[in-house]
Amino acid sequence: MKKRIALVKRKTTETDIAVKLNIDGRGLAKINTGIGILDHMLDLFAFHGLFDLQIKAKGDLKIDIHHTNEDVGIVLGDAFKKALADKSGIRRFGSAAVPMEDMVGGVTVDISGRGFFEGIVKSKGKVAKGEDGYCLEYANHFFESFAKRLGVNLNIELKGNNSDLHTNLEPVFKAFGIALDQATQIDPRRKGVPSTKGVID
Image (cartoon, rainbow, N blue to C red; front, side):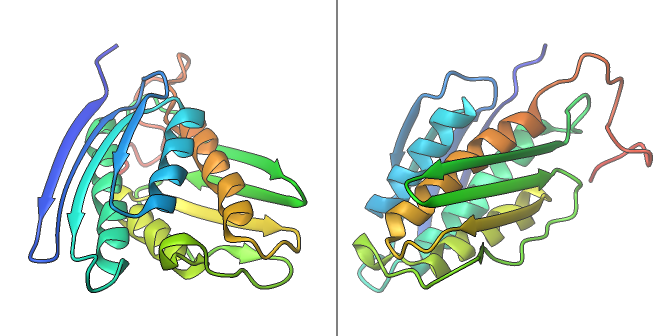
């Protein structure tokens, strides 16, 4: 099978980001975005998705974390899209639910070519800000950027009443890795692109 590897770089007046991705990896990660909690969550994503992932980002963190957080999602989405090429043979769909304490993070994906993400749906309670000033809204910005750039229908649900940010996000990012791993795996029975249209843009 052809190696599904991508190196994507993006430089703007606000951020300078490089992502190296191997979809068929072993879960090895080296992440440095300058946002500690995002680094940790992406480590979990790569480990449980068995993606080899390197991210190096420099951003205008002296202003705030918004641009870096959002642009990391953009470049990571671009890297998956490049590595998947025409998406021939992939399973396309994936779904996973992961618990942590009283929380359950559920993620469902469809690599359809149509980017969609409406936001993390939480069943109960509010979520407090965590380290680096990170909050659930920043996670939403990250996932929205990723979904649009890859072209994936991404649905995330959180069940439970815990207000700790870490306890909310950790099961989500683990489930995100597992679901995306399922969706990007090659189905040996599938010949060509997994769409009746014959193409996934």
